[in-house]
Structures are given as C-alpha cells and as structure tokens.
Amino acid sequence: MKNILVTGAAGFIGSAFARYMVEKYRHYQIIVYDKLTYAGNLDNLLPIDDEENYRFERGDIANRETLKAVLEKYQIDTIVNFAAESHVDRSILTPDAFIHTDFVGVYILLDEGKKHGIERFVQVSTDEVYGDIHEGLSVESDPFLPNSPYAASKASGELMVRAYHVTHGMNTVITRGSNTFGPYQYPEKLLPFFITEAIDDRPLPLYGDGRQVRDWLYVEDHVTGIDVALHHGQSGEAYNIAGENQQHNIDVIHHMLDHLGKPYSLIKHVPDREGHDRRYAMDCAKLRALGWQRQFTFEDALQKTVAWYRENEWWWRKIKTGEFMEFYKQQYAARLAAADQRDGNS
Ligand code: NAD
Ligand code: TYD
Image (cartoon, rainbow, N blue to C red; front, side, top):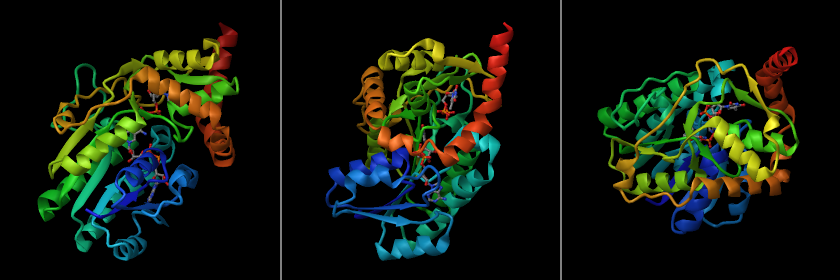
C-alpha cells in the first residue's frame, strides 16, 4: 500500500482521516478526491496543505473520466471511500443526490477501481443500515432494515461492495460507524448545529420528545477504527465502529448547554422528523479483536468539541449563510412556527 485515494475527504470524517494519515504514515501518498458539494470544504484540509505526502483533486466519484485520470496519475493502489450525501433530513427533502453518490457513485468507484487493479477498497458506512434497534446491539451479520433514503442509499452502496468482492474477488472492507461528532463537522448535524445556534442564543429545534437514542463516537476514535480496518480487516468483512455511549438526544444537548453555560430554555420541541429511527446501538467486539480501542471519553470529547466551535467562529460563520440558510428555512421555519404557536396556545 503506497498511494491511497481518500474520496470525500473535504468533508467532516474524511478530512480528519486525511489529516491523521498524512501525519502518521509519512511514506504513504494521500490523495484526496472530492466533488466539493455544499459539505465539502477545503478549510478542513488547511492543516495539511503544505505536506509533501498530500495532494487534492476535485472530482465526482460517479464521473468515470476524472476518476480514471486520477487513478492513473497517482498510480493509486488503495481507495478509502468517505464520499457521500450524509444528512438524513436532506435525504427526505431531496433524495436524488443520495442515489447518485451513495449508490451509483460507489458502483462506479468499484468498477473503475477493479479495472485499475486496486489492491484494497474500504467503504465507510453507517449503523443506520441496521435500522431502528429497539433493544440489544447490532452485530455485523444482522440484516439491513434501512428506514431513511440516506440509510437505504448507504445500504445499497454496501451491497454493491459485497457484490464486487464475491463476483470479482475485490479486496474490500466495510466499516459501519455510529453518530460521530467533533471539530469541522458541517453545522447541519445535531451537535455542531445546536452548539453554533446556542452560541448565538437561537432556538434549538429538537425533534419530537428528544428521547431518541444515538451512540456518540468522537471523530478521532472513528478515524483510528477505519485505520485498523484498512490495515487489519479481513477482505469481504464488515466492522462496526461504535462509541458504546448510547444517550438520549435531550441529555446530550443538556450536557452541551452546560459546557457552553447556556440555558435549557433554548430547546424547542418541534414536530418530529418523518420516519425517525428511535434507537441505534452496535456491538464492536469484532473490530476490538483486531486491536482497536477508543481513546476518548464522551465528556472529554464533548468539552473539546464545544471549545473548538467557540474558538473557531471563522470556520462556521461563513458556512451558515447562503445555501445553509435556504436549507434552514426549508427544514425548520414551519417546525419552529408550529412550536411557537403551540407554546403560545398552552
Ligand atoms: P460530510 O457530508 O461531512 O462529507 C461528505 C464529503 O463527500 C464532502 O466533502 C462532499 O463534498 C463529498 N462528496 C459528496 N458527493 C460526492 C461525490 N459524488 N464525489 C466526490 N465527493 C463527494 O460527511 P461525513 O459526516 O464526513 O461522512 C463521511 C462518511 O462517513 C459518509 O460516507 C457517511 O455516510 C459516513 N458516516 C458518517 C457518520 C456521521 O455521524 N457523520 C457516521 C457513520 C458513517
Ligand atoms: P443527525 O445529527 O441528523 O444524525 P442522524 O439522523 O444521522 O442520527 O441527528 C442526530 C439526532 O438528533 C437524531 O435523532 C435527530 C436529532 N435531531 C434533532 O432533534 N434536531 C435537529 O435539528 C437535528 C439536525 C437532529
């Protein structure tokens, strides 16, 4: 393994992975390939901009021509695919891009990778493929029961990875991470959205009763999990990467507000997300058996994360304009108005 194409690494987790790999493995070439959608941001890669073993190329994973040119130019032998449309709420409003990238894009990446003789292909996936887990923990052999267009498109991408492994003997590994948080996360996801809104004393639109359960994983632990799976995972296998830290959304937000020193009264219970999964929870013994272990406690990681958004307004203030505000209006205006009306009437 020498020349690694990291697709979608101008986004949140991919950029953390690229920064980590460039520092840790000086003898690897890390080539980031990213379409730079609304979620792609070259600021996320600034810390490694001058590094000798890092290059950036702009392109779509579903575009065979640009992809082929990059695979050849850098003699790529390994692909780690982070590229995705990643936000459940957007998949409910506008699912087309999810099918394009999370399914068709993965197929084209596999197909061009196969033609080029790729030696290792890692697909970064999600616990959402298992669907709503009322009790217990998902293990890797559990069936897929995806509920959102996002989860369905990620599950479809995984099935194509499996097919290329079985049919063409491609050396593949899949990782399924749980809800991830940390610096450089686009402020549409729960924690960065609520932290940055709370800094400005704006209402925090919590869906439904806020008692949905997510398993929170710090981004740096997610990245080391992918590193372990890349280097030690068995071909054809999938590995859960869990935070083993299941919490109700409302409790996570209370902790976050305590760290910021802001009042709980900022929370507004708004009408729920359609098809909202109540609980995700995974077992990650299979990855631990390869030698992975988490480094961060939830409390430390949350504190670091809150501090980072407080200290890096330059990064998120310019994002929360234009396109973001259009999405905000579409997603939240009616919900917040309904909550105001309810509270005014009660
Ligand atoms: P993100 O939305 O922050 O970043 C996605 C990146 O992919 C962006 O840089 C975007 O420009 C790029 N991209 C989108 N479409 C592309 C295309 N067609 N071609 C090339 N690049 C494209 O996402 P994230 O939160 O960093 O998630 C990264 C991966 O991890 C995704 O595959 C996601 O499904 C998975 N995942 C995320 C979480 C989470 O909690 N955020 C948890 C588990 C798994
Ligand atoms: P999110 O960050 O969108 O991740 P996912 O849907 O992939 O788990 O949401 C995390 C949880 O927070 C989820 O239960 C939905 C909830 N949520 C809200 O209550 N309000 C919001 O504005 C957002 C974005 C999420």
